[in-house]
Length: 236
Image 1: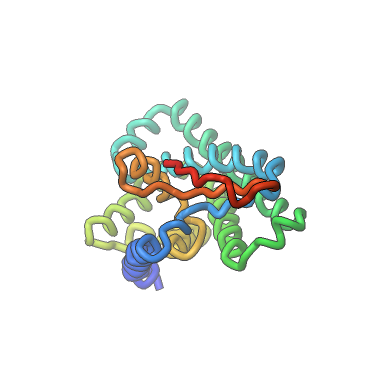
Image 2 (image 1 turned 60 degrees about the horizontal axis):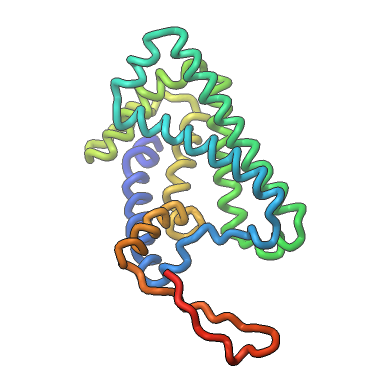
């Protein structure tokens, strides 16, 4: 099972994510968005979006640093004070992201207009995010000094996948809750082409507009009195 989950599955997931995302861009590039329901309800969304994005972005940044710069975390954790700061900060950011995702769920359930436009994919997205944040917080609470074993186990495993020398032994002895966290991250990557997860790739969009890579969008303004006489305006 470990061989399947941590050797073969990552490559299947990455292949589907890359091919599916390219296919979605080619066939329906204007679906590359978060499909926001902000126009239906903005107040609750604001209080969920701020903690969610702050928490999840900084936590992801910590994960990426440990993978890209393997020596950084051991160096940082060499000082007990810095180790404590990193562990407390990571847990706090995890709770912050958790607050955000819980607000998202409450909003979907409590607002009738938002609930009416909620698709099955939206439900799956929320479930995956809840599992990811929940298992991340549990890992931080149940197993102390997670940054150390992450940089010594999960980080090398990710690098082994990237450099096409997969080695499941790095993570095979990790606790089950940690393995669930890792596998759920693979599920997240797998779902990118099919859900609103793809919207973070749309961050490259503004650069396309700046350098003329995308055409103007036609916007037709219809007035209440003379809808047929309103000019067509172009925006870039």
